[in-house]
Length: 468
Ligand SMILES: [Fe+2]
Image: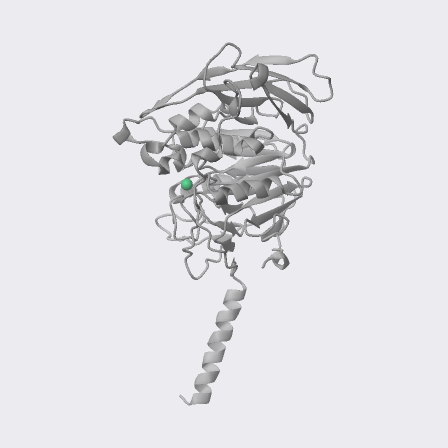
């Protein structure tokens, strides 16, 4: 082969390669500033001042429709009244306050004894109303507030933050700060698991659960965080004599699981504004005949898209992940549940676990059986978008070990810390944006106009112009 001919062949190969790649997803070439995930010391978050002051205050939705709230807090002593919450609508002068009593418990873990963990569910709240609430007594009284969601309905706008794998490092702090300064402001957080990372410390240092509670309080006391459980919630440590999985997490963080007829706080559903949110547990049994499997099968039949057009699933371990970290760990759950999610036209599945960011195309891989050997994801307009957002900034650092070439199902991926905003406009459109920590919050690193699968099942177009 002459030199000219060889050059021609090489050019053709290059051209072909370029055309294939140009149709593939994007691996961001954004160069992160090297940023170790250094843990914030315990002293960064001291308990609030005052005798037996309530601390680690957090709230979550308390029923299926958004007219109840679970208020949780911790006190060091179980005095008379330390389990009482008083609350009133902000449009009254507060002279008439409702009150409710919390259930109170504590737990032991290895050589640690927790404070008194209080959980009160306040019910019968008005929709779209600001409430003040008050915990503690005397000079230790602390006051907070929250906004109830609008009445459930098909065109109700609502804005969620999406955060995962947060931990409590200086990077975590940046994530939370950026989320709290977002515009539009998130009204509730979809949290995809891995909270405190206490288990990364000697003997699962349970004081890190306390410091985590103080760390997130500036947001979590004022708006509901919808919790999914990750592997760092297991705290399963037989070598320490700790054999009860999820004990600290379930003692500290409640969910309204009974309202959706679930038998475990680890999987449940809520309706909020125009959304139906299903939370799954990657680390609980999910095969056929198990409680979670039976629950999800009947749960999906209850979703009425005419009432709640948007259907989201939260789960910790991702089903589509092209990062070397945790590669295929979510595969068995994907094989079990993916056909149902496609059949029910779920809009987005949010996952964490991998400490980076990735967004998929709408693909499914449900044709596979052991006989026909078909096993490649294919474009599927009924399939969800899979978003991996385990990039909250925890102590374990960034996951930057992507597989190459980038699989065709992967639309965008970047090894940076950050958070996302899901801004639902109406029954057909939601603006989804992802924000890396290194930029100011208004900078959008990835974005998509998400089209509702039930009312507008058209293909979305990437908003590539916003990327660096
Ligand atoms: Fe995880």
